[in-house]
Structures are given as C-alpha cells and as structure tokens.
Amino acid sequence: MSPVSGTVSAEQAGRRVEEILDRLAAGGDEQACAAAEELVRVLMDFYGAGLARTVELLARPADERAEGRPPAPLNGLLGDELVSSLLVLHDLHPEDVPTRIARALRGVRHSLESAGYEEATGVLRLRLTGSTGCGCPSTQEVARQAAIEALACFAPEVTAVELHPVTREPALLQIGAGPPGAGPAAGRAPATAT
Image 1 (spheres, rainbow, N blue to C red):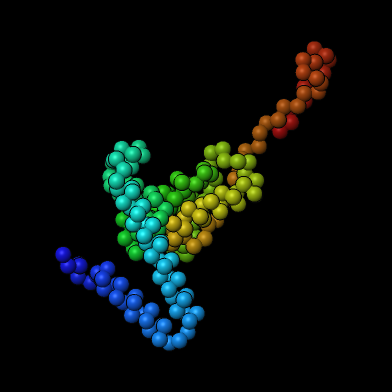
Image 2 (cartoon, rainbow, N blue to C red; image 1 turned 135 degrees about the vertical axis):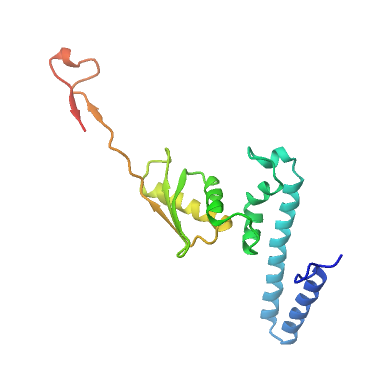
C-alpha cells in the first residue's frame, strides 16, 4: 500500500531524521546533537502516547465512548485532551473553534460560559455561572486558570481569557432586635435593613 500523495511514509521519515542527526553529529557540536536526539525522543513519546490513546479510545464499546451523546467513533477522540491537541496541531480537528471552546469549558470544574470570542485577537470572555464559589477574586482567578489550562489542549487559538466579575443582587437582610422569640411581644418591632 503506497502512501497518499503528498504524505511521507514512516520509512521515509525515519531516514530523514537519521540524515539530519548524522549531519548534526558530523558538525562536531555534541550539545546540539544531544539536544536534537532528545527532541526527537520527546516528539516520539508525544505522538506515541497520542496514538496509544487513539487505539484505546476506539477500542472502547460504543456506549462507553458516547457519554450520553449519540454513538460516534470520534466522540471519545475529540473529548480527549491529548488526541484533540494532536488534531488541532495538525489542523485536522473537525470541530470549529467555538465548539472546541465549549468542549473545553465542559471539562472545567467551575461553571463557566462564554461571553464572546474575538477571532481576530484570540480573546475569550467568560463569566461564572450558577453557584460557583463565592465570586471573590481568588475564586475567579482559579476558575480563569482552569479554563486556560483546558483551552490549551482544545482551543489553542485562544490567546487570552478575560473573566467578567460575578455580579450578584444584594440579599435582603432581616435583623431582629432581640433574641429569637422575643419579637413584637416584647415591645420591640424588628428592624429591617437592605
């Protein structure tokens, strides 16, 4: 079976890597040669892990891969950080950026929703939703960092994340003037503050 036109076979790629490493070794710079060999090992580990994960995900039963969505062989792959990052890296990911952003945010522990993505600048605006924490700055920063980490794999096109502060309506606070049960019978009317 011959490779698809324009692609490189594993044998051709292996020969090319060996040629480059041999040229570096012939140059006499041992540090450059060692760094190049380490780079090749790291890349091989990365791609090997991605391929292993792909095989593992495809081998799962369809009902386990689907996670509540219609069974499709790609669901598990697209939801996996490692495989998704490889697909994005090679411009093979079938989902558009907003879909990948939504996928990344679903995996974040905090309840976040997109408030807009600017493709030209790569800026994603988010807001906390639901009952995520207290809305204090430290909680918001933790949520923002979690989103950044998830987006790095699924939507690296996002270059900055802005988190809009949580705005909450002030609660009505009832303040009584005496101990519980003392109320109006004790001759005092309860005070009300907003």
